[in-house]
Image 1 (cartoon, helix red, strand yellow):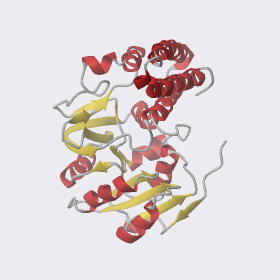
Image 2 (image 1 turned 90 degrees about the vertical axis):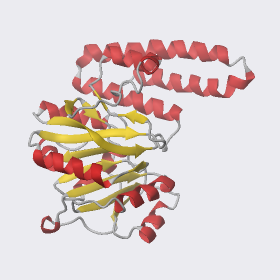
Image 3 (image 1 turned 45 degrees about the vertical axis):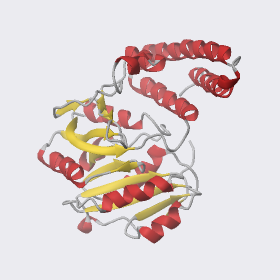
Image 4 (image 1 turned 180 degrees about the vertical axis):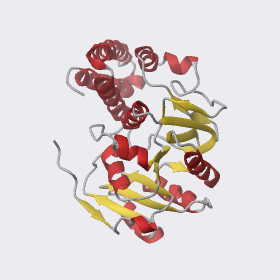
Amino acid sequence: MASRPEVRARRPALDAASASDLSIVLVCWNNKDYLEPCLRSLFAAGLRNRFDVVVVDNGSTDGSQAMLRTLFPQVALIQNDHNAGLSRASNQGIAATSGRYVLLLNNDTLVNGPSLDAMVDFLGATPDAGAVGGRLLNPDGTFQGAYAEFSTLREEFLVATGLGGRLWRGYPSHADAKEVRPVGWIGSACLLLRRDALAQVGLLDEEYFIYGDEADLQYRLQRAGWKVYYLPSVTTIHYGGRSMDRWRRRRMVYRGKLLFYRKHYGRGRTAALRLMFVVLSAAKIMWWGGACAAPRHRARAQREIRSNLDVIQLCWKPA
């Protein structure tokens, strides 16, 4: 097992006597240009509930730490000496806070006070709620995503082929549902968790480097009897995909899917998923191989081929 990263904390965690209603955890890796406006939106939101903020920095080299020290001295900083992954860094942040509720918040978001207060109020009034979230919006205010049900082989086929996105807006996320309801899982770009529920089921599984960890956690919450609720009135601006390019992200997304299936769905469905990914990736390689003949498509085609070869390699070994 990999060793834990070295950590340098700027100040200690809050003690129980000074615990906030809400602890907000952000993970940063070379994303200063988005982290700063995210924090500005947070401190300008006019929250009714007491809150504290911790940023876990995964070895950024873009000046994020200096910006935090200068502009946001009220934010606790946990400094890792390398990129420890989203799930592990999020767990570090959760462990360093003591609020009754924990908000996992992406650093490329812009928040608003009424939405954050609504989530806190909902958890306070809904004893069976282990987690709650709402709608993600693109910077222009259009719908980006809401909630999803847990993965099926049919869904993975529609996602991998791109058919789902062509047939349904935002697929596999449900497109802008209008009612409060229990759901499968909600992305961790803005996800509020009950600390008591986390104490029961455990924190994020650190075997996920990034992608899939939030679905895994919410699956475990529901198996333990907690519910995950979607609140349509809650909105968060999310830029999305700012930490890595689409080709590297593809491998990490597929790794998360395979790990989730291996943990929760058994050998049969995991084997079927691996086979599906291999066949579809091989077909994409042949398609992009043909596209290499056109000079204007060659650079992208080469990256697509390498990316799909990575997926095939991933499918032949444990996730």
